[in-house]
Image (cartoon, rainbow, N blue to C red; front, side, top):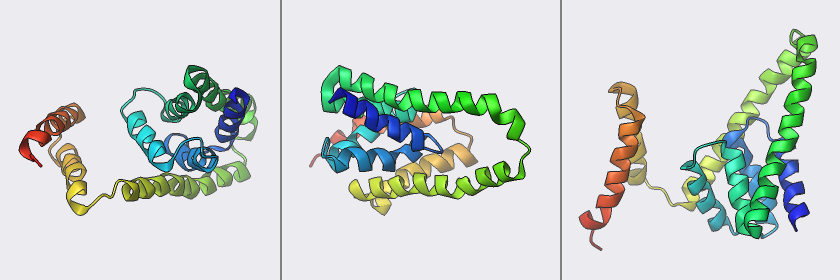
Length: 175
């Protein structure tokens, strides 16, 4: 089982372009498709990962691996997502100087950009649907965005206000 976890996350690490949130559709397809976790559990793990410091893809892989097979599964999944991209970056670093001015390399990197955007937008929409977001629930992050952009409110204060609001919700809405 550990090798299967490692191998699946290695494949994900190899084919993830754009990093971070672009990894979500690949992990979902591999892990939920194999019924190692349910779709609901997967989205809950994404929510937890969002609050953790560090590399999103590795944290998500570690949490999913932990859910599947405990600490060993978490380590296998994390290593799987780290090793392949590390090797690829080393190879790119070795040969990039020779190809950085190549017109085809430049075009390839420009062509990848829209695909990365789609890989990020697709899970955002899926998560919104899974959490049954409404216009009312979208207003809170929209208000936070407005406060940060137009009123220069520090994101730290936004997080603190969000925590306080979350703690106050049960007392405000006693249902």
